[in-house]
Length: 386
Image 1 (spheres, rainbow, N blue to C red):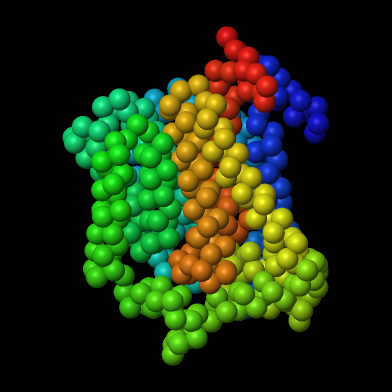
Image 2 (cartoon, helix red, strand yellow):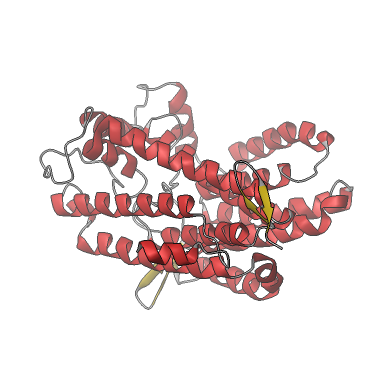
């Protein structure tokens, strides 16, 4: 294994070993946590069995291989095929609005399709397409992006995926797309005038969603955060169980195989609330360790954006950084009862094959910008590749 990584890190093709190791560590831990849930039977009433951790293991392996393959493809050449992968992506997403689309048990949105017995979440694939196409769009117009027409087109570009997932009822993913858009456009040469106007635009968008799109149940999920313990319909019970589970592990945790009677059941324990199970299994120390590794992933991708060959590579890294950061913030916030429950998985750890593979592909894009950068970055000096 060491020799394989050495070959990949040769002068001909360098791999960001730190980033790849961190995401692989997270996905291994995630698979072990799901294995623990399946073996203990703590969530057997949700049908969480061996197939879940096996799917996670296969997805992790596929994702790892794809990230390496993508890292060898020059991102500058890859984006030029936007005319091919955009229609395919939109076509797959459109299937969620047909008879092939369905609402997964425990979810609020119809964001999945089932083809030949395999379940897919097309919005995860759309994240890859959006990061690539919006990076390409920004790189083409950056010097004149502050002209009203160019800014309008950029806003429309960002509104497309946000609008699609909102129509599906997936408000969590809509926020993730908005964050990706925000991270990328702020990293460009945007005028301070637009930045000053942004809070008012965001406030207006929130008001429109609140009064026209969100139903009573979603509003109560948000309002209860400001008034905990006053919920007559017990909407906050899942988060209360999540906090209880997180705290139950103490300092060092109960271990992976404590047994069904030792673990606290939380709905969606293998997915949205897997961080709560991490607290049961690994304790406070392990939970903090996971947060440190995830923080490293976000910061490493951001750091890689500073050493790319061009602005196209920078935008790809910033989009990926924004996506990972928002996922981590919202997911851990849900468990800690600091954010509403809106179904955003923890990167590389939560159960979900499509999310796992797509996030590895996005890591592959970041690795591509790193491998094809103009300089070999060193703490003490920069050495030209050319």
